[in-house]
Amino acid sequence: MSLNKKQSTLALLALAVSAFAIGTTEFISVGLLPLISKDLHIPVTTAGLTVSLYALGVTFGAPVLTSLTSSMSRKTLLLWIMIIFIIGNSIAASATTISVLLAARVIAALSHGVFMSIGSTIAADLVPANRRASAISIMFSGLTVATVTGVPFGTFIGQQFGWRMAFILIVAIGIIGLIANSVLVPSFLKKGTKTSFGDQFKLLTNGRLLLVFIITALGYGGTFVVFTYLAPLLQDITGFKEGTVAIILLAYGVAIAIGNMVGGKLSNRNPIGSLFYMFIIQAVVLFVLMFTAPFKVAGLITIIFMGLLAFMNVPGLQVYVVMLAERYVPSAVDVASAINIAAFNAGIAIGSYLGGVITDSIGLIHTTWIGALMVLGAVILTGWSRALERKDQKANHFAKEAC
Image 1 (tube, rainbow, N blue to C red):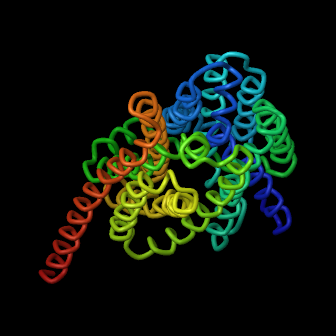
Image 2 (cartoon, rainbow, N blue to C red):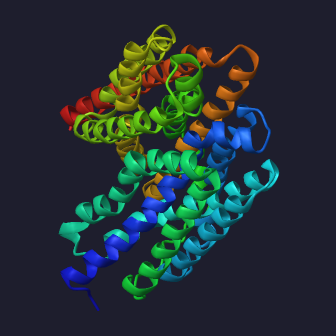
């Protein structure tokens, strides 16, 4: 049984709505930190744990829960993901203590990890083989729109009506996603491929793949040392009013979306080579922010550049992990992709936690150069990975000549 074009497009839009809700949830608290801190009478760095713990939930939830649920019907799993998502965010919206809010964030994160792992495969199954890439990009458009509009709009709603209202709106979008998925996504989707923990272990013990997972965590996570505390930084150091912060976050989101598209194009031919230069520029921009942050115009320009580079590395890192997995552990390409999603979130968790420690100890402004140091670690490891890739190419070239 197959779907006609209209049915498959509607099913993809239902997935995109879910992706929008899930994408907004991940970063929503970035713009709400000052409000959560004030309302719950906690330091802004304790409120920052709403970002770190969410990311940790995704890090451990993605590979483990994807393996455990691989024999479930895809549609049933999708509906359960949305139900857990709604429960997690409903608890967050009604939380009166930080411990309840953090528990709610972890619950919501578990749904995020599995959705990211299965969303692409469901999207690809809804259409003929020649439209798969487009189908996946429609689903991911929900995440892009969330990055551009979800966080600034959530920040604006939080500033006008209280931070809980932002979570109530996310619950409403989650309910729309749940209904849309139950009506529009067909139930004849094939089940996931059963991936053993043995395959996951193989991937984690392969030196070349492990190197890229570490690069992903450092290179992507470095920006989050600053980004997690961007709202307080813009208010306390650059001197912008609370209302202006939502507009700046919107501009930052647009920069992220542009950077992501540019990164995709740059990484098509030689992902590891492109990543090397992206990380160098990213480290420089973060370092420069230390000096420009106290000045409105210069600070704003630097922050827009930070946004451009923040997600530019994502397509290259994903493509390169798949390339290496196909070469070294071909039986576990999907799992390699899921582990890299976990590595992105490990980077967010490390970066946002580090940002909190720095803000508490030496001050908010120092998140900039320490974030730059984290990315510099990725530059060094990417250079090493690039050298190994060149060595492989030479070896393959000589092997072909010998034949």
